[in-house]
Length: 151
Image (cartoon, rainbow, N blue to C red):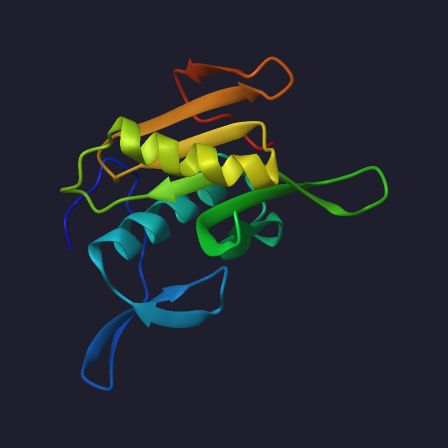
């Protein structure tokens, strides 16, 4: 797979049933190794190993319903609320390395945020990463220079 603009990690890749698969440590299973999945797994490891995020507070392929349609967020990062409940804090959307990150991609993640109401939105194609902090009450967002360290 393509070298990304992320620190390398030791990926667990196997050929299963004639298909190349990669271990998803959050879903705890092997999944098809697509270019987008390669970005996801590298980014998840970056968040855990370099940014200090807890794998127990992250989930891949999080289902939500938007205007009566079922959707899936690529990755959601949670924090623990005052009562110990999980509170979504960041949505991450991945694209394959050859897919340009456009306004359309941001529109997609912004629609997901209408449901989850998180503070951070991240989009990455493995080569370029964009993060913005959202002020939901004001309806504003500010792009950050870097991904925040452990939320």
